[in-house]
Image (cartoon, rainbow, N blue to C red):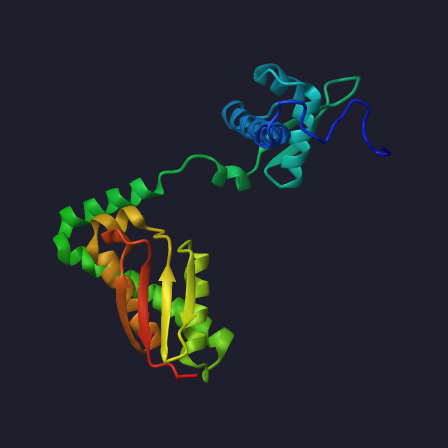
Length: 243
């Protein structure tokens, strides 16, 4: 057929299952992703390197390494510089950019937990509660400003709940809003973005509940709770106009 490479077959070979064929087709993509990660790690550890140097240390082909470097450069994860040494062709060296930092391991959970432990040793439970109250006020100001900018002063409670769900979803909570049509809305968070903190510090969850009440100016009741082992944190919000 036109366009098919000689010897290439889009169909599983005899005895090859569909799952095996799918795995075979996915292997190049997985291999490319793995190579990109190894390139970033090596650049982070060794500093500016040429494609030849990376290929040698990674045991990969120069062509393959160069292909992945170009992809990383397009994504602003590596930067290329040209270095000249006398006569002859210049060398191209690659290095990671600040944008690549988020791809490397981090321990923000450990930092937050350690800081809270330090705060507790300084002032006990009351200082922990004061800390989360201050955070609640900061978040509340941001949410109120966003609601005012996006919805205006005459927004309905239902619109405010939906916008709040969008805000929480952007923070990593896998959040959605549901209106049952009878004057009740539900705000559901299917992920706790601060799970390790919330699990060990009840003040975090108490602050979130109070935050929603203040921002929405409505009755908000938590009906399910991830920290208790539920699938989601679900909040019942009353005061909407029935359909």
